[in-house]
Image 1: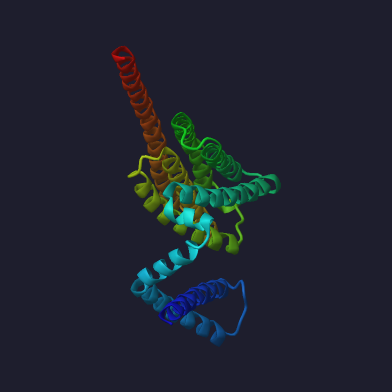
Image 2 (image 1 turned 90 degrees about the horizontal axis):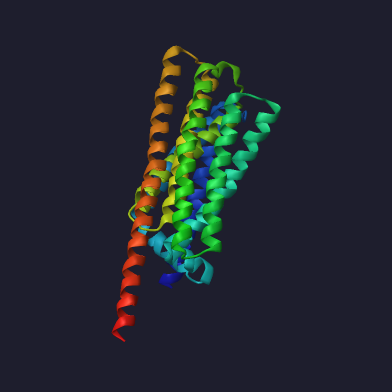
Amino acid sequence: MDQINRRTRVLMFFVLFLITIICIIVGLLLAFDIIIAYPFVSFFINALSITLLCFSSYVLITRYKMIKVEVIRILSKNPFTLKIVKEYDFRTAILGLGSLLINLAFLSYYLGYTVFNFSIWYLGLTIYYALLFFAREITLYNFYRYPNNRTKEINVHLIVGILLCLLPLFLFITAGEASRQTSKFKEPILHVLVVGGITIYKLTMGIYNALKAHKSHDLIVISLKNINLAEALASLVALMATILVLTKDDSKVNQISIDLVSFAMIVVTLFLGISMIRRTVYEYKKMQWEEGISGLEKFYQQRKY
C-alpha cells in the first residue's frame, strides 16, 4: 500500500511540475502580448504561476530523494533504461544524441534564416552550429562504432579540441556583426523567449556537466560535455544580441558590453580546445609508455621460459 501511495505522490508531483511550466509559458506569452486576454485573466495567470512555482520548488527540495528513488525504480525495469541509469558514459551518449538532434534543428533554422534573410550574423551562426554538429556526430559515431577503443577515443578528443579552437573565429565574426548592426536585425519576440530559456538551461547544465566530466577519465564524455559548454557560450552571445534587437537599444555602451562578453566567451572556448589538445598529447605519451612497459614484460616472460 505504501508503494502505491508513493508512486501516486510522485505522479502527482510530475503533474504539478507540468502545470507549473504551462502556466509560466502562458504568463510569458500574455506578458509579451503574443496572447491577448482580459487584464483580470492575465493577473490570475501570473498569480497562479508564482504560487505554483513557489510550491513546486518547495516540493522539489523536500521530496527530491523520494522522486529520484521512484524514477530510478521505474527506469530499472527496462534493460535499456537501466543501462542509462547505471552507466554514466552511456547516459552521456544518449543525452548527446538528443543534443545532436537539437543541434541539427538549430542548424536548419539558422541555415534557412541565412538563405532568406542573408547576413554575416546568421551565416556565422550557421557555420558555428555546423562545426558543433560535426564535433558531436564524430564523437557519437566513434562511441558507437569503436567502443572501448583507446586510440579512437584519443583521436576523437584531438579532433574535437581542434574544432573548439576554430569556433572562436566564427563567434568573433558573429559577435562583431551583432554589436555593429543590431538595428538591422528583425527578431520575433517568441524567438527571443525560446532562445533565452534554452540559453539559461544550457549554460547552467553546461558548466555543471563540464566540471563533473573532467573528474572522470573518459575522453568521450569530456568531449561531449565540452561541446555542450561551447554551444551554451555561443547561445549567450546570441541571446544578448537578440535582447538588444528586442529593446532597439544599439547604444555604444551596449555594443561594448556585447564585445566584452563575446571576448570572454571566446577565451573560455579557446581554453577548452587547447586543454583538450594538451590532454590528447598526455594520453598519447601515457599509452606509448604503457605499451612499452607491456612489451618489456612480454620480452622478459619469453626469456624467462
